[in-house]
Image (cartoon, rainbow, N blue to C red):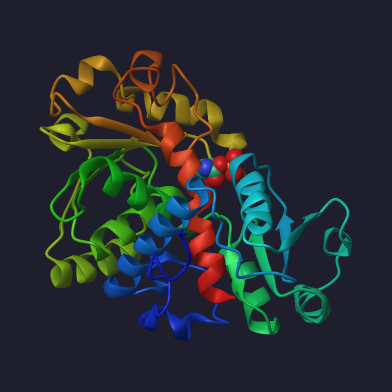
Length: 323
Ligand code: CP
Ligand code: NVA
């Protein structure tokens, strides 16, 4: 009989101090903790697949606040919470008083009286920090303009499953230096990957985040290269990652971005320079014909649906850890 004990879920000693903590960035976790979190996600996944779901969250409730659209984040958190034995509430800013100007601080304090945890997806990262400051319960970042930590954890889990290890794996991110790039690069730097980032001029990653990633890389042995040249970035790469050119909230810039990013499409031509067995990743939703050609995302190289599935398992590990 499989049980939490069989999978050695406890003691997860180095994660126990995360009970009650917020997860606003992937680098809330240090290298060792991140390794453990990925391992926990793998074990939770195995238990679910074996038909013996891990259910430590009976009676717990998760509030999910959204001020932006979502398919994966909403469904995977809702299903994940249910599978862990708890329940969740979908809370759109179209219905909440927050959408009519109720202060974040009051919302945080009220929600803390009803819920055990909040996951929030919104624009300004500072709003999530404010929510966390006033709430007595853990706050999980389900995407801000700056970060997408749950995505990065699922991405690392997916790379580990496909490559068998993370250290030294050649990972290239091409496109906008956005929320997904920030979290991916921070997580990959913590876990020792060989990271290359190619962005058009004017769309580079935040220099402070790059500096932080470089500091992690110095410790983990990761390599970090930034360039404007997609060819240089994909040379012999094993994992190629891209994201939309126009993120939610930046729609007004769409036309300009289509022009600025035109040379950064991930297509078969570009991928001739990569490792012949390269893997293609994308957090989704994707725009075929923009950041990625259909003949790449719909090819045997693509692992985008494994990635999407792993959101579920990675977030169950996060929920288990903070609750
Ligand atoms: N990747 C991701 O976060 O997808 P959703 O926007 O559908 O939640
Ligand atoms: N960078 C994208 C990710 C969507 C999951 C956005 O913020 O819209």
